[in-house]
Image 1: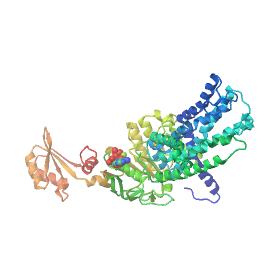
Image 2: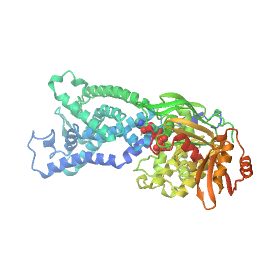
Image 3: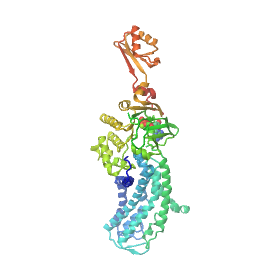
Image 4: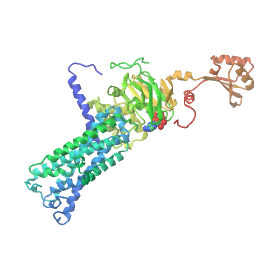
Length: 288
Length: 328
Ligand SMILES: Nc1ncnc2c1ncn2[C@@H]1O[C@H](COP(=O)(O)OP(=O)(O)OP(=O)(O)O)[C@@H](O)[C@H]1O
Ligand SMILES: [Mg+2]
C-alpha cells in the first residue's frame, strides 16, 4: 500500500468505482458470452419466426381463431411482434428466465467457482446483487428479442402499415415500434419478481437444474392459482397476476394503471425473496 | 527467517492463528479444537490422511464455512469479520481448481481478478499474463478450459492464487495431478514465494514433498491437530534406533538387555543377523558409542552399526495410525 498522498484521493475513488463495476461487466460478459444464453435467445427469436412463417404459408386465418392479433398479421407485419410476445408470456419467457435465474448461485456452486469468487473476495452481498442484476439484464433482453425478431420478420414477410389499437385509435408504424418497446419493458418488469424467486431458490442448492426447474414450476403454479376463482383473494398477490395486463400499452391514451400495480407487486417480490436470498446466502457454508 | 510479518499495514506475530477451531457436520466432528500457529515467512506443511479435516480447516480459514466454535485470525486480523482487508492479500487453492469450462484460461483469471474488490482494471491484463507465465501456461492462455488437462487446470488454479502480490498463500494439495516437472516447478515456486517474504500454507499427504519444501509442519488426524512445529523438531521428537549386524545375535541380545534396550529381530543377512533396538526406550538418552563399546566388550562381533532417526513418514504413521481405512 503506497502512503496516502494529498491530492491522490480522486483517482483512488475512481479506481474503486471502476473495480466495483468490473464484476458487473464480467458477469454480463460471461452471461451473454456463453452459448447457452444465445441458445435461449435464439429459441425465443424462433417464436415470432415460426408464427410469421405459419401465417405466410397458410391461407387467411379466420378472424377470432388462434391467439389475439393472429388474424391481423397478414395485413400488418408488426402484429407478428405483438402476437409473439403474447404467446411467449405464459411459458417461454418464464422458462428462459427460470434457467438464467436458477443458475445464478447454484451454477457457480456447481462449477466450484463460487468459492474462488468469494475468496477473490467478491463479497457475498455484492455477488448476490451482481447475480441478480445479471438476471434482470436477461429479463430485459428476452422480451426485447421476441419483439424485435417479430417486428423484423413481420416487416420482411408482410406489408407494414398503420396499427389499429385496442382502443380503436390508429397509430403510425414508428409509434407502433415504441409500443413494442413499451410492451417489452412491461414484460421485463413482470419477470423481475420471478427472477428474485429464482435467485433465492438458487441459493438453496448446488444443483442448478433443480433450481431452474423449481423456478419454472413456481411460475406455472402461480398462473394456475390465478385461474382458480376460489382463490380470488390470493390473485392480487400472485407475481403472475398482471402478466397479461400489457394490453394497456396498446391503448390511446396509454393506461399506466396495470404497469404501476405490476411494478409495485414485483418490487414486493424482489424485497421479500431478495431478503430471503440474502439471509440464506450470507450464512451459507460454501462446501462445493 | 523473518521474525515478524507485515509491511506497513499492520504487523502480526502469526500469519495464521486459530484457537479451538471446530466444525461439526451434523453429529460428525470434522475439525476438533485445532490450534494452528503458522509463523510469518514459513513454508508450513499441513499434513493428514484423507478425511482428516484439512480442506474443512482451510474453508474456515478463508471464511467459506463458518466455524462451529473457535476463532481464526489471518495476517493478524480476525476472519471472517475482516475478509475485505485480509483476502486481497491471500492467494488460495481450495480442494482443487474450479473454472468456467466455456471460458479461456486467461478469461477465467480475468473474471476472478475482476471479482476482487480492490483490483485495478487498467493493470488486469498484465497481472493475468504474469500469473500465467509463472505457471508455464502462456501458450495455452487462449484455450478454453474444458480442453485443459488435469495438470493444466491445476496450474491455472495456482496462477489464480498468484494474481496479485500476496502475503499469504493457502494451497490445498497444489501438486495434485502434476507431472514430475510440474511438481518440481511448484516446489521451486513455493520456495521463491517464501523467499519474497510470503507465508505459504500448503496441505498435502505427500510426506516427501513436505520434507523437501517445508520449514514447518502440522499433522492432522481424524479432525485433531496431533503435532506441529519446525520440521527439524518434529523429526527429533521421534525416537532414534540402532541397527546392528552381527553373527552373535544371542550374545548381543543379552548385552543390549543389560543396557535396558529391547532388541527385535530385523531379518538375517549372509554375514549375520540384524537386530533393531529403540535408543530412547532406555529412557536416560544412552549414547550410541556407549552401546558399541559395551557390545565389543561383551565379545560381540559387530559387523555393522547404524543409528537411524525416525523419518517423518514413521512419525506420521505413528501419529495418525497405520490402517488404510479413512477415519470416520
Ligand atoms: N459437506 C460435507 N458434509 C458432511 N461432511 C463433510 C463435508 N465435507 C467434509 N465432510 C467430512 O469432514 C471430514 C473432513 O473432510 P476434509 O475434506 O476436510 O478432509 P481432507 O483432510 O481435506 O481430506 P483429503 O486429503 O481427502 O482431501 C471428512 O470425514 C468428511 O467426510
Ligand atoms: Mg482435502
